[in-house]
Amino acid sequence: MITIIILILLAMLFLVAELVLLPGVTLSGILSLICGGVAIYLGFLNFGPTIGWILVATEIVLMLLTIILSLRSNTWQRLALKQEVGSSASEPIEEQVALGTRGRTLSRLSPMGTVEIEGKIYEAKLLSGYVDPQCEVEVIGYENSHILVKRIQ
Image (cartoon, rainbow, N blue to C red; front, side, top):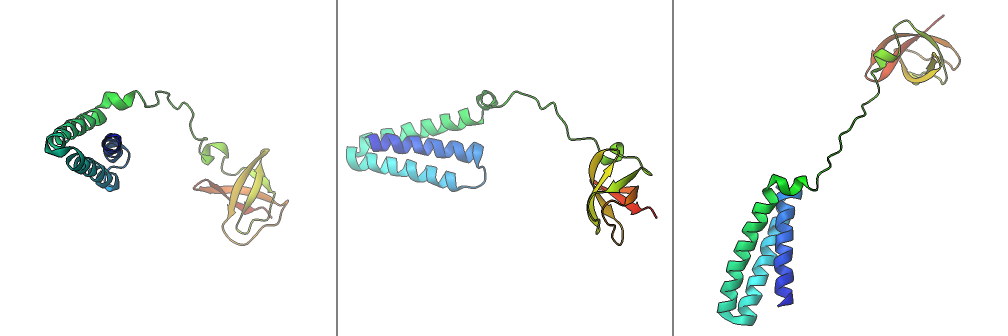
């Protein structure tokens, strides 16, 4: 009898997993059907048709209750985080460094490297060629989160 109860509980657990955690994967749904089917089979086999049919009815009711409780929005709101994210990503690179600003290379740009502009370190990209460390560069544009620079002669 304990085995049957455990199988029914597993069937319910796998059903919740299929509905809420892994929708569309069907592995949990198949495991739910297998556990429920084996529980019913063991009920018929060990206790006869009367208990077997009672198990069928009980399992149908339990599965319907499981589905209804799983899909209610109130059920999962108790588990959901209620805290809001107040932070944001850093401001765009265009707002941090103005065009024409000058700086110094910290590493070799060939074509990517690091530059120091107004005391801050940025990832920079050179359009062509290379620039050695400790050379002066000027901001000429932006690409994604990188600064485009050119060497000042």
